Length: 100
Image (cartoon, rainbow, N blue to C red; front, side):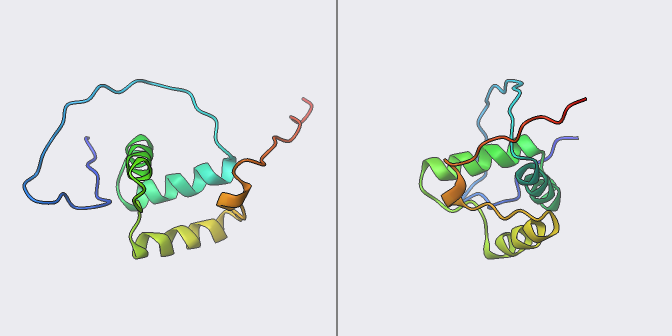
């Protein structure tokens, strides 16, 4: 099943571009990941497609989300108790791993 981006409708005629994707392992804050997964599911997207869209919008200083999606994100942040903000982004430190 190939999911298509539903974040913003294409302007004008539909254009496609062939790309090459690579598998990567990234580490994200647990609650941020839960919210992102919720947003991806809400838009019927794969998580990677959502992240690509967010990045491409950010690279052009554009907002990636509609007001409706921002409201959904607020709800998901409440559900997952995500209290981090953009101000926190360069001040995050990891907790010590729990002993096994």
